[in-house]
Length: 184
Image (tube, rainbow, N blue to C red; front, top):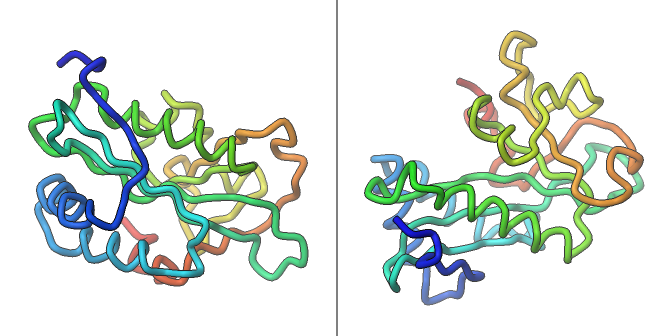
Protein backbone atom coordinates (compact mmCIF):
# COMPACT_ATOMS: atom_id res chain seq x y z
CA UNK A 1 0.00 0.00 0.00
CA UNK A 2 1.19 3.49 -0.81
CA UNK A 3 1.10 5.51 2.41
CA UNK A 4 0.60 8.61 0.25
CA UNK A 5 -2.97 7.36 -0.19
CA UNK A 6 -3.52 7.54 3.59
CA UNK A 7 -5.31 10.58 4.95
CA UNK A 8 -5.28 11.14 8.71
CA UNK A 9 -7.68 13.57 10.34
CA UNK A 10 -9.32 14.26 13.66
CA UNK A 11 -12.53 12.32 14.11
CA UNK A 12 -15.99 13.83 14.07
CA UNK A 13 -19.25 12.62 15.59
CA UNK A 14 -20.34 11.16 12.26
CA UNK A 15 -17.23 8.89 12.29
CA UNK A 16 -18.49 6.95 15.32
CA UNK A 17 -19.81 3.95 13.34
CA UNK A 18 -16.58 3.67 11.34
CA UNK A 19 -14.51 3.85 14.54
CA UNK A 20 -16.53 1.04 16.13
CA UNK A 21 -16.17 -1.06 12.97
CA UNK A 22 -12.38 -0.61 12.94
CA UNK A 23 -12.03 -1.76 16.56
CA UNK A 24 -14.43 -4.70 16.12
CA UNK A 25 -12.52 -5.96 13.09
CA UNK A 26 -9.07 -5.34 14.58
CA UNK A 27 -9.78 -6.98 17.93
CA UNK A 28 -12.52 -9.45 16.93
CA UNK A 29 -14.56 -8.63 20.02
CA UNK A 30 -17.07 -6.15 21.42
CA UNK A 31 -14.99 -5.25 24.49
CA UNK A 32 -12.58 -2.94 22.66
CA UNK A 33 -15.25 -0.95 20.78
CA UNK A 34 -17.15 -0.56 24.05
CA UNK A 35 -14.00 0.79 25.73
CA UNK A 36 -13.49 3.27 22.88
CA UNK A 37 -17.11 4.44 22.99
CA UNK A 38 -16.87 4.97 26.74
CA UNK A 39 -13.52 6.77 26.49
CA UNK A 40 -14.81 9.10 23.79
CA UNK A 41 -17.65 10.11 26.13
CA UNK A 42 -15.50 10.32 29.29
CA UNK A 43 -15.03 13.94 30.39
CA UNK A 44 -12.10 12.95 32.63
CA UNK A 45 -10.18 11.88 29.50
CA UNK A 46 -10.43 15.28 27.84
CA UNK A 47 -8.77 16.90 26.07
CA UNK A 48 -8.52 13.75 23.97
CA UNK A 49 -7.06 13.27 20.52
CA UNK A 50 -8.97 10.88 18.29
CA UNK A 51 -7.63 10.29 14.78
CA UNK A 52 -9.01 8.35 11.85
CA UNK A 53 -6.90 6.96 9.01
CA UNK A 54 -8.59 6.74 5.63
CA UNK A 55 -7.28 4.88 2.59
CA UNK A 56 -8.88 6.17 -0.61
CA UNK A 57 -11.81 7.36 1.50
CA UNK A 58 -12.29 4.02 3.31
CA UNK A 59 -11.71 3.89 7.08
CA UNK A 60 -8.52 1.94 7.80
CA UNK A 61 -7.45 2.74 11.36
CA UNK A 62 -8.12 4.70 14.53
CA UNK A 63 -6.05 5.91 17.46
CA UNK A 64 -7.13 7.51 20.71
CA UNK A 65 -5.08 9.48 23.23
CA UNK A 66 -6.86 10.43 26.47
CA UNK A 67 -5.80 12.79 29.24
CA UNK A 68 -3.89 11.30 32.14
CA UNK A 69 -2.83 12.74 35.48
CA UNK A 70 -0.32 12.35 38.27
CA UNK A 71 -2.26 10.60 41.01
CA UNK A 72 -2.82 12.79 44.05
CA UNK A 73 -0.59 15.67 42.95
CA UNK A 74 -1.40 19.36 42.96
CA UNK A 75 0.50 20.17 39.74
CA UNK A 76 -1.07 18.49 36.71
CA UNK A 77 1.00 19.02 33.58
CA UNK A 78 -0.56 17.86 30.31
CA UNK A 79 0.06 14.12 29.83
CA UNK A 80 -1.81 11.51 27.75
CA UNK A 81 -2.22 7.76 27.39
CA UNK A 82 -2.35 6.13 23.96
CA UNK A 83 -5.13 3.54 24.07
CA UNK A 84 -6.25 1.97 21.93
CA UNK A 85 -4.75 1.83 18.45
CA UNK A 86 -6.59 -0.30 15.89
CA UNK A 87 -6.10 -1.00 12.20
CA UNK A 88 -8.47 -3.08 10.08
CA UNK A 89 -6.90 -6.46 9.24
CA UNK A 90 -6.56 -5.71 5.50
CA UNK A 91 -4.49 -2.60 6.32
CA UNK A 92 -2.29 -4.09 9.06
CA UNK A 93 1.50 -4.36 8.72
CA UNK A 94 1.54 -1.63 6.08
CA UNK A 95 2.46 1.39 8.19
CA UNK A 96 -1.02 2.74 8.97
CA UNK A 97 -0.62 2.34 12.73
CA UNK A 98 2.75 4.08 12.66
CA UNK A 99 1.33 6.98 10.68
CA UNK A 100 -1.47 7.33 13.24
CA UNK A 101 1.04 7.34 16.11
CA UNK A 102 3.24 9.97 14.44
CA UNK A 103 0.25 12.20 13.58
CA UNK A 104 -1.05 11.88 17.14
CA UNK A 105 2.32 12.82 18.63
CA UNK A 106 2.56 15.90 16.37
CA UNK A 107 -0.94 17.03 17.35
CA UNK A 108 -0.30 16.46 21.06
CA UNK A 109 2.93 18.46 20.82
CA UNK A 110 0.93 21.35 19.32
CA UNK A 111 -1.53 21.08 22.22
CA UNK A 112 1.24 21.25 24.83
CA UNK A 113 1.36 17.64 26.00
CA UNK A 114 4.58 16.74 27.83
CA UNK A 115 4.49 12.94 28.11
CA UNK A 116 2.63 10.10 26.40
CA UNK A 117 2.22 6.67 27.99
CA UNK A 118 1.23 3.35 26.45
CA UNK A 119 0.77 -0.20 27.68
CA UNK A 120 1.58 -2.20 24.59
CA UNK A 121 3.84 -4.40 22.49
CA UNK A 122 7.47 -4.04 23.58
CA UNK A 123 8.77 -4.52 20.02
CA UNK A 124 6.31 -2.17 18.30
CA UNK A 125 6.04 1.06 20.29
CA UNK A 126 9.78 1.71 20.81
CA UNK A 127 9.99 2.17 17.01
CA UNK A 128 8.02 5.37 17.58
CA UNK A 129 10.07 6.73 20.48
CA UNK A 130 8.47 5.03 23.47
CA UNK A 131 10.82 4.00 26.28
CA UNK A 132 10.09 0.74 28.11
CA UNK A 133 9.91 0.43 31.91
CA UNK A 134 8.14 3.74 32.54
CA UNK A 135 7.81 2.72 36.21
CA UNK A 136 11.61 2.55 36.55
CA UNK A 137 11.75 6.06 35.08
CA UNK A 138 9.46 7.29 37.88
CA UNK A 139 6.01 6.71 36.35
CA UNK A 140 4.23 3.68 37.83
CA UNK A 141 1.15 2.52 35.93
CA UNK A 142 -2.34 3.09 37.34
CA UNK A 143 -2.39 -0.55 38.49
CA UNK A 144 0.42 -2.88 39.50
CA UNK A 145 2.47 -4.36 36.67
CA UNK A 146 5.08 -6.93 37.79
CA UNK A 147 8.64 -5.88 37.00
CA UNK A 148 9.11 -8.80 34.58
CA UNK A 149 6.32 -7.26 32.47
CA UNK A 150 7.42 -3.68 33.11
CA UNK A 151 8.86 -3.20 29.63
CA UNK A 152 5.29 -3.17 28.26
CA UNK A 153 4.48 0.03 30.21
CA UNK A 154 6.19 2.79 28.24
CA UNK A 155 6.59 6.55 28.17
CA UNK A 156 7.70 9.13 25.63
CA UNK A 157 8.62 12.73 26.43
CA UNK A 158 7.37 14.93 23.56
CA UNK A 159 8.06 18.46 24.85
CA UNK A 160 11.24 20.38 25.61
CA UNK A 161 10.37 20.00 29.29
CA UNK A 162 10.40 16.22 28.95
CA UNK A 163 10.88 14.36 32.20
CA UNK A 164 11.43 17.63 34.11
CA UNK A 165 7.67 18.01 34.62
CA UNK A 166 7.86 15.70 37.62
CA UNK A 167 7.36 12.07 38.48
CA UNK A 168 4.57 10.07 40.02
CA UNK A 169 2.02 7.33 39.67
CA UNK A 170 -0.17 7.80 36.61
CA UNK A 171 -3.94 8.06 36.83
CA UNK A 172 -5.92 7.61 33.64
CA UNK A 173 -9.41 8.60 32.56
CA UNK A 174 -12.15 7.12 34.76
CA UNK A 175 -13.26 4.68 32.03
CA UNK A 176 -9.83 3.05 31.87
CA UNK A 177 -9.25 3.23 35.59
CA UNK A 178 -10.19 -0.41 36.13
CA UNK A 179 -7.76 -3.23 36.94
CA UNK A 180 -8.85 -5.47 34.03
CA UNK A 181 -7.33 -3.00 31.56
CA UNK A 182 -3.95 -3.30 33.24
CA UNK A 183 -3.50 -7.07 33.29
CA UNK A 184 -2.16 -9.45 30.69
